[in-house]
Image 1 (cartoon, rainbow, N blue to C red):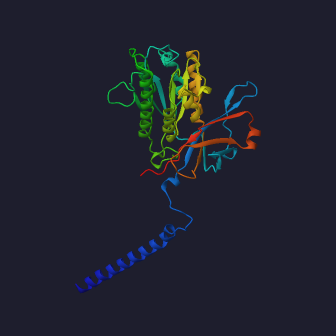
Image 2 (cartoon, rainbow, N blue to C red):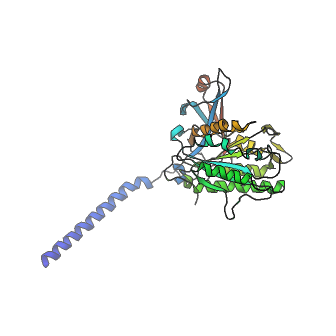
Image 3 (tube, helix red, strand yellow):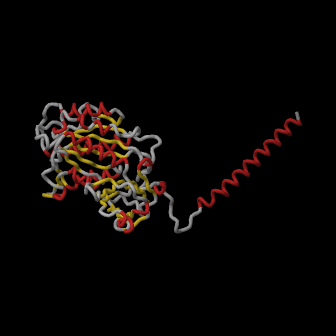
Length: 367
């Protein structure tokens, strides 16, 4: 019995000695990590993430003079400016390395307007969207949302959107037809403006809830890492306006999720993108949103053209460039962004147009 106790005590002393040695080694190794020079400042988790800037490069084909997607650029071909101050591009992705998307089909309900004013031009023609939608990648999702000038921004009670992001293209197109086939409703411009804003914010929430577990990419907010890129496709004639301050607030919401806005209609909008602000309001909102997020507004006079146009939009977002950088300060304010080609790249790729988001908001880390 004494020998057994002596062995037990010896074992305890050896265990305690090993614990002390391990603790000492841990403190020794951790000390350089904890110690900071006066100039290093605190380390925030957000500094491990990058602000992503998505966009595309378009070049004129020298033989046909038609715009074509330029996919041969490298990281060293770009320059990135934050509030006119050049910053270092720390990550560069394109093609297969990009994070997947959530493509949102957005329409206005039946308001009795001429078809080319709202979304009526699409009624009975959604089949022309299907061939292009079948080119979505397996990790991409598709969702549906709408708004009405009577204040409605959903069909089913209790649902923020019409169709949550999923993989069923046929179900999404059927939902669009159901929205366009509802009875005509009446409303006023102001009520419709607010309904449209609620819808966009609901899309933003639904996109965040549809995050894949292992997608590639980083975001401004750490909790948004690996989120899908929201692509807002307005199937709409763009006869709308809202107060400029509210339009900019929507842009900020879209910017926080790095979303891109595109438009498709059957006719050109009577107000060109150059109209901008008039009488305290921003007009042709979809044009405005597209211009500021790296997207584009398209028109197709015949339904058969919906297929190639939508196919081109999907190709653009699949082959887009994503530049990552660390903001110099996380002030939560709007910063101007500018992306340029280097002089050498301009010589190699003349007559190239870059479409990248024009602004971003460097957000502090969420608590």
